[in-house]
Length: 215
Image (spheres, rainbow, N blue to C red):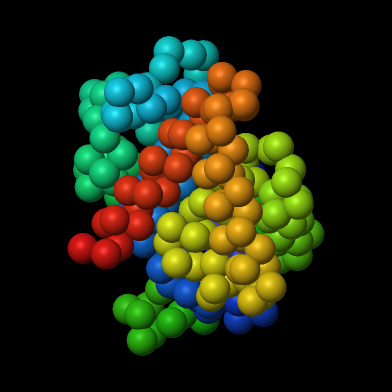
């Protein structure tokens, strides 16, 4: 499951399908999630302060293939430039991701609509297992797991200021401590080169999202 999809599962009220925090559906946040996805795969690397798309085989996920094709025309560029570029992800990205989750029976598509939000569709969670998997991925990442996708989810939650909204206070505190430790690991210079490269790229994307939110 994509990092962006995991974020949406965490941001939806399981029973009502309402947003616990609608910031999770913000285009910049979801763009950052897709960039982080590519960074975990080694497809997007930070080189001389800019993110550069790396050559590689087609990805199994059509959305990732689409974003890769768009990035071929826009990289190298800084993470901030990519987040500001609305053309590197398709329009209506949140809706596309939610419909995809519903088509895979992860979400219900509720007939009731949020009229206060212009008739937006509700998506209660159908597969609580999928939501629990996302939470367990966070727990493993907090416990010093080496899995890059879990660390990317931590970076995304913190950069989007969703950690304190979607996680328990204890988990949010652990997340901040984990990211501080991660920064120290990167600066210490003892990580394997590929892992250090991926982490530096991921941190750059997170930092760019934080900066954009402050503007």
